[in-house]
Length: 98
Image 1: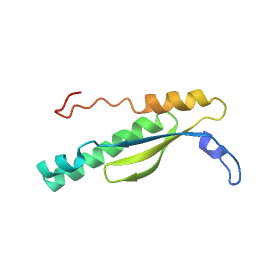
Image 2: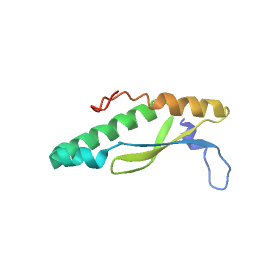
Image 3: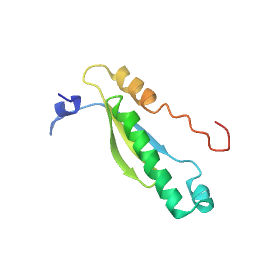
């Protein structure tokens, strides 16, 4: 059973949220073909979703080049923070450093 099924209407829950987006997206988009931008954004979203869900999180919302990820732990709020940080162990090189 998913820990997310414990969340019910009219109950108080604690979450850890992580906002993510692609820095410099507008400039990058100008340098690429529209199809390449779309493919890159789709691949990025898939990657983030896989990383987040593998650490007990969910994509709360997604628009364009970024989104809001939520992490919920039933008992230990330090696990929420740990999962949020570990869930996005993203190391992508952008040409402006690592």
